[in-house]
Length: 304
Image (cartoon, rainbow, N blue to C red; front, side, top):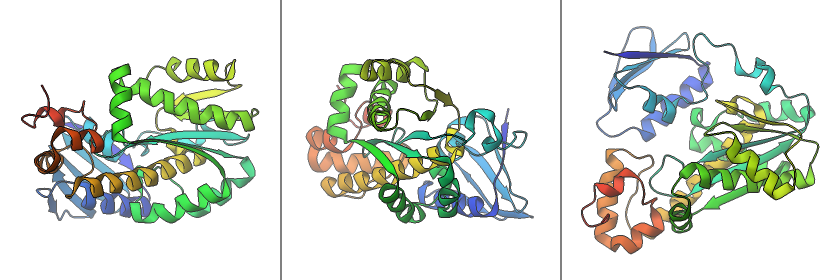
């Protein structure tokens, strides 16, 4: 039985989604023409149609993995705008924190935290800041430069070799991720103790809170963890910075691999992983890939 998910995007975000899908989907993706649609594609077990009205319909037996990768943060058809959510108001100094690379086999795990005051909201919106999943990498590079140059930021980049060591200790990616978030946020809070903190919720809320208490000696004045927090301009800015730093780290991993790599975790990634393993074996893979991913199990000789 097919499940359906419905989202609503404006024209700019619809174009950005199409650009991102054309770059990220596997080569066997089937692009189609549908009446009254901007674009339509079948890939990864789902069918997506983006209508000229802005409605995006995703259908398939298990659409949630696809939605999580490509449409996380997009407002649903029956959902009010997230920036009207009282939890996501921007009427006080705010630290927003987001990550990139969690679902990518190759390249680093990155967390970025950004501090901004309410009077800078228009500045962020004028840049075109939005959830990085709705923007092309090309568009985000100049945005990230403006954010890092003009706002107080903290970025934590965990390249694969260090990531693999940390994962071996924690055996849980959410614990590794919480460490990075807490470290970046605590550093900003030491300079802006009055700020509220907003983080996209990825696990038990105690993961970040307990780590902040350990670093700061007390809980933050206000810590908000909600799904799709990237709708908030400051979290959106953090998501853009994190994505660009991930792309830069991915390029470093690709250069070290000696072959073309692929973002994400699907079949094209398996093909690239087999090439890289043939070039440098386990030693190379430990420097360019997150070895606990299922992709490693599909490479004979890589996992015991």
